[in-house]
Length: 174
Image (cartoon, rainbow, N blue to C red):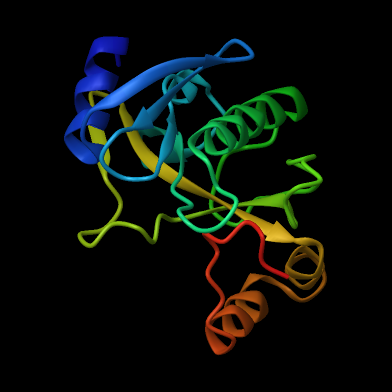
């Protein structure tokens, strides 16, 4: 997918985007909703396939609660991109990213990639010959939440978050 095609697709999904450079990683900042999205991570081949199609993704972070500024969302997306590439980790739902964010003003420091839960009509995707590109949501976790996910699994963490009605968009939560 060309950069122009990517921009057109993501603009259709998220509305107008301002493209910024974060440490060499292009990131789109949505102007209508509180979201940041990678603008090229879909070019990274992490070896994922579905049938005869390569599966790629762009990373979206849509936190809107306390502590989540557009710059912090952009930095989280760029940091995720860097960590996945540097460590050779496939970008897929369920991937935990320990120590992703080092910001003492926040209580969330670890990343979790998951199927997006921010769209009413399912996960947006773009299909091309031999390739499918979809969005993968980045959410940030506290130390306690990360420990539960790492030790007991994501299902246990998700039940706990639902039961406590935790807002994953609140980056200052306890």
